[in-house]
Length: 136
Image 1 (spheres, one colour):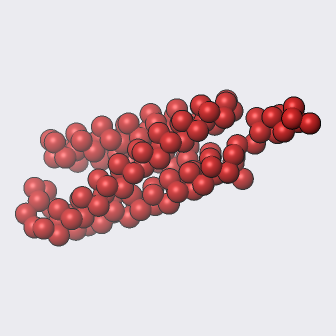
Image 2 (cartoon, helix red, strand yellow):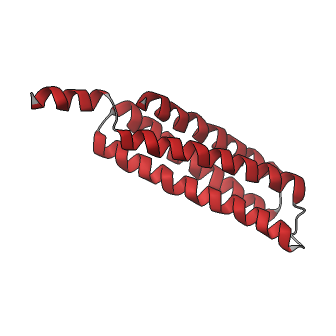
């Protein structure tokens, strides 16, 4: 009887993976909202407190997405499901691309680096939502 339970656990991810990927999907939605707000309301270099507040919110959401990306990767390693493991590795790569693009954009103030942020965002959104739908 315990072999059947272990086999079913290997086929379907745990509820923790479902909830973690759901939270990261919502965090990515918040990150997108903050990014669009930064695009519309911030002028670089920052001169007002409200501009710094919007950018700080964007950075906080980005750090939370990175944290939950690591949590999804750790859970994927723990569960041992190959498809989820590959998607979580790709998710971390895309988060790294977005973070590098954001740091380069803010450091150099070159708008071309915003495309790296967009590439990383959409890649991470694809991987996270794929993990979410795989976990249902």
